[in-house]
Length: 200
Image (cartoon, rainbow, N blue to C red; front, side, top):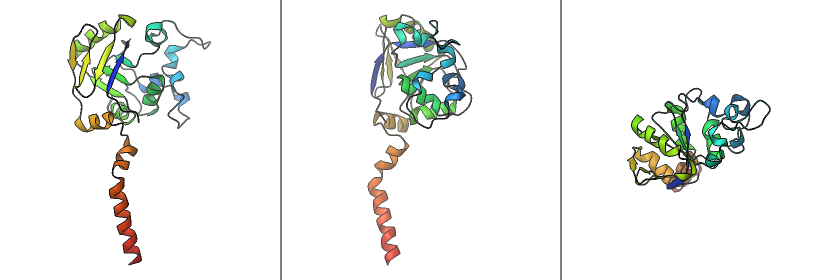
């Protein structure tokens, strides 16, 4: 998993509340178990018209936000079913950070497991971030995980809370497999002891 340290990007504003995982990645794309290739299907029902062409009104199709790595979203982002394909699709598109006032618990946990930083802010802070994001390519946000700050285009700073263990995992690029591999020496020593008992 790619470590998350500091991220600077034009934020994409998505002023929609209760964005569920079926909106993030519709069910017809859930057949794959690969984490790659889902970026083109991200928000597909909003991004594309019935004929398959792009919907120019959707935020991620607008020139200023096509390469956004930060998504500023409405309340209760990631609700609905527990599909892990939702963070996979966000990450494959290029989104590394989602900022909202609240997230569904399962989606929130799945973000950390896949290298995405979900940040909770107050309603007032979210409104200010929406204002920044509305400026398009004229404004960028810088998210510093070590310092737990979001710096706006005009120098204003927002601090955010994060669980220390989750912070450690993101900073060091540790998913569940990586955490297990960190204990590799102890696991090997344990297995050696078991082998010795079997042959004793």
